[in-house]
Amino acid sequence: MNPTRTALLSTAAAALLAVAGCSPAGDAKPAAAAASGPPAASVNGKAISQSTVDLIAKQGAAGGRPDSPETRKAIIDQLTLQMVVADEAIKKGLDKSPEVVDQLEVIRQSLLANAYVQDYMKTNVISDDAVKAEYERIKATISGTQYKARHILVAKEAEAKEIIARLQKDPGAFAKLAKEKSRDTGSKAEGGDLGWFDLQGMVPEFGVAVSKLDKGTFTTVPVKTQFGYHVILLEDTRPVEAPPLEQVKPQLSQQLQQQAVKKQLDSLKAAAKIEVAGVPVAAASAPASAVAK
Image 1 (cartoon, rainbow, N blue to C red):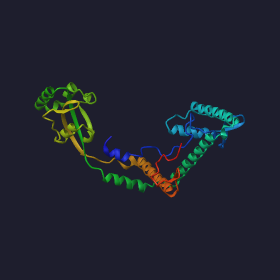
Image 2 (image 1 turned 60 degrees about the vertical axis):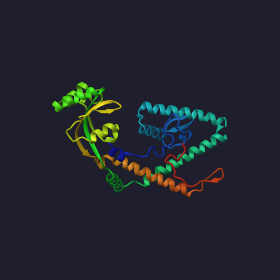
Image 3 (image 1 turned 180 degrees about the horizontal axis):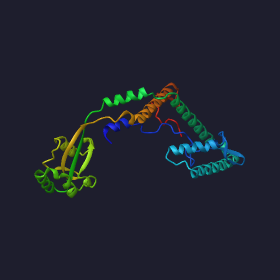
Image 4 (image 1 turned 30 degrees about the vertical axis):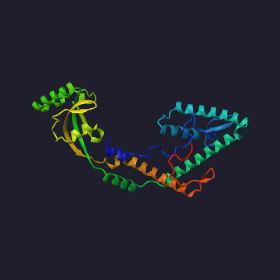
């Protein structure tokens, strides 16, 4: 991936705030049974709603798990087992234990916080104009050159010099010699073709050598790197260009939305009176994962 695409496609390192209960294996909560909708199953007369199963299946699909009859059966199986075990816990009074009460409160706060974030994103949609402005801002910072080259990699300097001597007699034989001689298995079959690249993606010695070549010329002295000795042919150069707006629009929109949510969370945190162990805490930037899970 070239540096332009990297800049335009970059998003926040972590997801915003995952909705609790997305995984039937561990995140689904006993409270799911209270959800409205036609029942998908019941346990001792208490319903597990179809809407709960739909929600978990939808969130699983968003994470790459197929929404299939088998998956939905597994979800229902897990929820019914969870409800059976939860009922036994209630019979033993475990729902009244301080630890469980505390955990339930954390879960409640997490769900509410996630609901707030989801609502904020729905009511503060990133406009096309904002996306375009961000695209133009990044585009204006893009500069540099990309190179298209071939190379032949060998183990010994003498062999590289021999290849250079043959190329000086027949410059058109580069691809043929690369297929015969090169130790680079990634480009050997393509006649040493490395495609388009930027110099930062190459080891320094290789990049320096390429930058000194004119189009259509090859190195007349073997280029030594940690991989061996290279003979390099520069085929073409071009200025770095930004990909089309439509290609990166979804990623830019997501990035701007994440920034807007973070700014709102920071604002809420800054306005709150927060104390830890009796010591006031200075307002700090709220991380995107501020909501406990």
